Image 1 (spheres, rainbow, N blue to C red):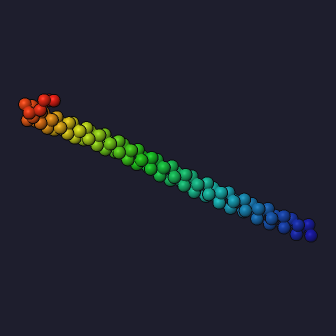
Image 2: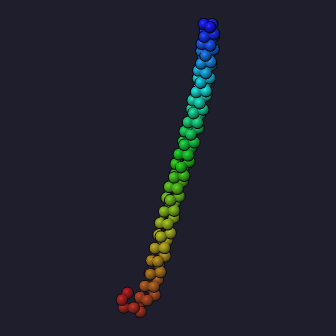
Image 3: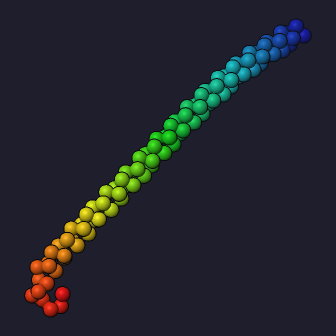
Length: 99
């Protein structure tokens, strides 16, 4: 009977040892998978940040160019308007007393 208890205890110890080894392996695999997922997420996040930064930079450049173009167009329109005013003043110089 003592022999049966010893055998049973040995069997349980072996089962427990196998369970512990399997648990360690499984846990290690889960940790590795988690690390890989974290690296992947970090890389994707950094890539998205770079893309956003590039997009903001491009929008800033477009905005500057648009502002420059609008200022040039306004300047041209001011010059054109002033020429028209000058022409009208010249045309009606001797006909209008207010000018």
